[in-house]
Amino acid sequence: MELRTLRYFVAVAEELHFGRAAARLHMTQPPLSRAIRQLETELGCELLQRSPTGVALTPAGISLYKDARALLAQADQARARAVAAAGAAVLTLGTLADSAEQAGATLAATFRERHPGVEIRVHEADFTDPTAGLRSGAADIALTRTPFDRTGLTVRVLRSDPIGVVLRVDDPLATRTSVRLGELADRPWFRLPDDTDSAWRGFWMPLGSRNTDGPVVRTIHECVQAVLWNGTIGLTMVGHRMPPGLTVIPVSDMPSSDLVLAWNSADGNPLVRSFANIAGTLYRART
Image (cartoon, rainbow, N blue to C red; front, top):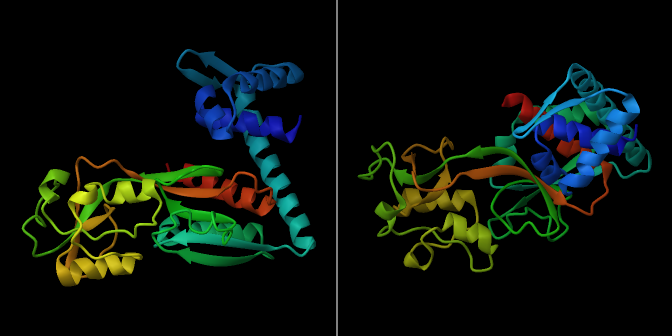
């Protein structure tokens, strides 16, 4: 069994759907289906029960899934140790705002346990670069938020969060359970710099040119202070911790924002793949 085929199988086993697994693997469905059929032929047993709505693991599939995950993790560790032995045991993690803190301490602890000799360097980007240094080459892998231009990048969603508006607690809307964008149209919004990624800018400034009188902000700290001092408003994740005097009210007609892990698709650094696999495993365990 080749490691590549086992990665294919693990993706199908976790997604329980060939289409979703193919999208996750950045390939089309027919070759993925053929690879799994070939694997079943080699093993002489059925691994998946197929149906029009998806697939289910057979007892043999459950057994292989457990062993395959362990084997792939060992392979990733072996690659990482080889990289470390070559003197390249450095990984630069790009972050945007507090995305690294949102990912949680368990991710850092697990990565340190798996790769104790690897130095993690942190590159913190501002709102003009939602890829957190991937485009400029300042980061190897990034914890950030969508949406942004994904060209040439692999993006793995860790979780989705509903969006709310940041208000002062003395705002007339601060006691509401939710608001709609239209109710905020006449308010001064903080703005993002003109050179910000267009997809990112369009999401976080959903009213576009209708609000041009707010301050331009580049960091989450500047956003918070703009609301606190000037009564400006803007968007953030529901549940995001705010300083005293501010609150977040859900916006019912805003789509959610994804906390994601992203890296350059052409990057062959095994530490990047190991980091991504650890993060994916941790977040699957939470859901």
